[in-house]
Structure formats: C-alpha cells, structure tokens
Image (cartoon, rainbow, N blue to C red; front, side, top):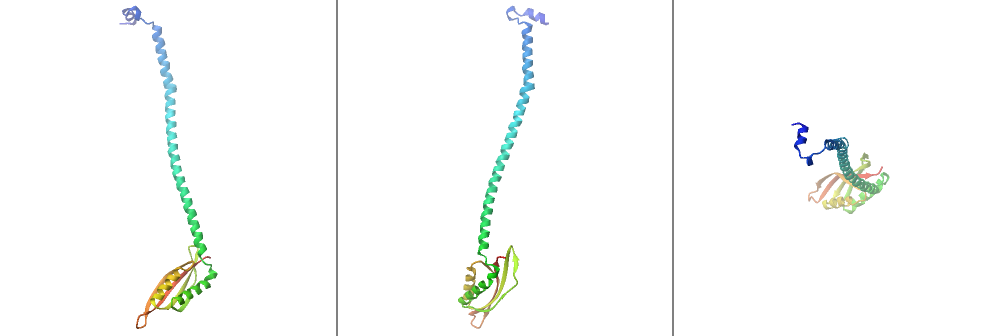
Length: 188
C-alpha cells in the first residue's frame, strides 16, 4: 500500500496533513540533535567534574589527617626538646668535676667505705656530651657498697656505673673490695 491509498483508507476525521508529520519529525530531530549536541556532552562534563570534586575531597581529607599527625609530631618534638634541655641543665660542666669527685668521696666515707683509689680516665665524647670515667677502689662492708651505689644514683646530674667487681676480703667474709668504673656525664 502506498501513502495515497493509506490516506484514502483512513476516515476523513482522522486524516492528518502531511505537514504535521513533517513538522513533528523535524521537532523530534531538533530535540534529538539538541540532546546529542548539548545535553549529553554537558552531562558527561558534569559527571567528570563530580568525579574530580570527589577526588579532591578525598585528597583534602588525607591532607587533613596528615596535618593533624604533623601537629602531633611537632608537639611531641617540643616536649622532647624541653626534656633534653632539662636534662642538659642537670649536667655539670666539665670544670665542676672536682666538686663531683669530692661528693663521691664524701658519699663513700658516709657509707663506711675506705677509698683505696680514685683515678679519672681520659674523657670521651658520646652523643653530644662528655663522659668522664672515674676508676674507683673501695673497701668495706657489702651493705656500705650498696648504700654507696644508692647514694651515687641520687646525685644531681647523670652518673652511670659502667662496671662493678666485688671480691670478698678476710676470713669472716664481712668485707668486700669493690672495683668500679663510674661514668659522669658533663656538658662540653
């Protein structure tokens, strides 16, 4: 059937002029063209922009977390710096060693120990400080050696017993010879 026969077969009231079909077809074409030329590319661009925004928000959140960590690290560094400064403030100067030696001598005497020898060894640098090793020989009761070590621990500044050797002396075993190396930490 051709178009003319189709038009004749339709009742007169349902006949639509060909111009209406052509106009509707042109309008559908224009709308389709508008969609494919303008709407679809804009939707694609908006989706890409949303993805970019989401990526940037994720990066921003990661940066905020890292910034918070950095602030915490800076605070911890400040605390550690203050602790090091307090530690350094408690250290004697190298010129004050004679005072420390006198205190060690007094502590040994108060603990009931006889000082057999005190000899300072050559100082050395360690971790930004001076370490002055003091070699000592003491004799007396074991409890006196114990009290001496406790008193040395309470001295201002930092001292550390590097080595300690105890030998029993006498028949009763009530006295010991103590040989020790005491490290005294000083400022430069």
